[in-house]
Image 1 (cartoon, one colour):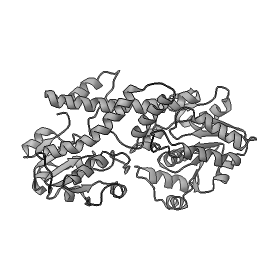
Image 2: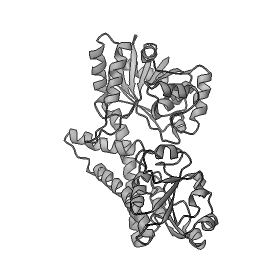
Image 3: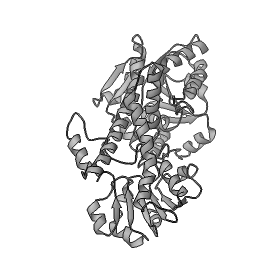
Image 4: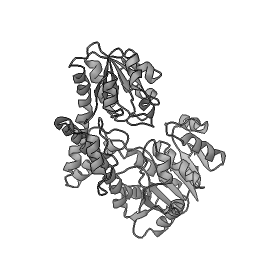
Length: 436
């Protein structure tokens, strides 16, 4: 079978490359000619471990192609994945589906023979049916079915998540057995390694992605609130999380305290779920509270830094280690750094920052006053205080003596709990962490 993937963003590029690794003939389509040229040269538009090698290998094997020619790619395809962005819509928080619907209108006249059109983008309930209406009205003679196949890719581990996922979810109409057969064939390599493949209705499949992300966001916010309580009563949040996580009904994942969640999924998906519920006259009060709490928490982290410096950072040199919302990615979307750094600058601090991958992405989003360094050690040199925002492994390798030797001051605010308090304090640092 031949596959066309519309959109070469995070989801589209990773999915297309992985399907080609399965042995399928895949064409990735984008309307940005420069982007297509760069990818053809091996320049990835995103940082994702292993992606450049995967793309290069399958392109060399003539299984993976890149083009701006949507018409030709769609006409030759048995399955067309829509993998364009669905950002939060300005003003109301709903998912912006304009890109999805534009692609549906554009691909409709290009369909050639029976084709399954699959929404890979994260979309609210009802989107698949609307895509089907758009295609049918644009091309009444088209032979097609629409299916939903949400992605569950973690940035920084996307290839492994695609190749060995916890589950594959497919939504399709009850009478669309041909579409189900196509999806079964596409995911046969995963079926052979006993990956659970769940077939549902369109609406159920669309909702599963939002329900999953909202629940994980809830776990993050819950442990962050527990961390604050631990600080108030003198408990250790890591031990609390371990005690909770040993309960198999709860599990240990996403029970890691920090400055709040960010990234391309949780912020927009929790908000979109709340808005979807409102549209259907339902309340998602738990998720609504999580959204509000997470926004407030990220803003409050700047005040935590200021408090650690005695309430005044005017003229203080603050080193920021980590800018991306999580390690192993250059993604700055809704990163806590975007809420922490501006208030510090506004309070008169000098901010010096370092991130292994995201500084190029961060510069347009942060104030011009931020100074960027080429290494972690250069960043912390002569700093009065150090703030850990992203838990990159290279930061874990820094020893207490390295901080003491090069810093001008002795204050560390570790928002990711990378270090052991006893060792940092023994080295002479004033060490502040989360929930300990």
